[in-house]
Amino acid sequence: MKTLKQAPVGSTVRVVKLHGEGAVKRRIMDMGLTKGVEVHIRKLAPLGDPIEVNVRGYELSIRKADADMVEVE
Image 1 (cartoon, helix red, strand yellow):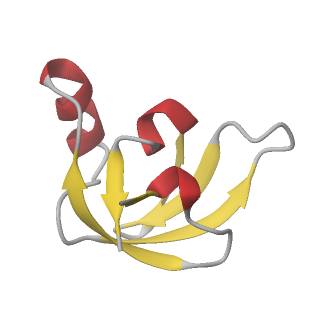
Image 2 (cartoon, one colour):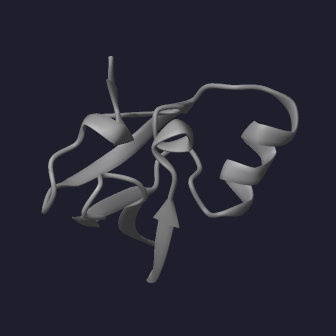
């Protein structure tokens, strides 16, 4: 299982599954990270948190803890 947190900078991945439950999972889905969507990893902050990605035509910064809940391929 590979997560969004583990994806290398510059790669484009597809969301396979969202882990987590309740409000946390809903918040991730509200940001546009749903099953089947393509995500381009743009850059990593100097200390590694957060991760900046392009999803559905906009830029999104997501914390490593949240990125670890998004399974990708």
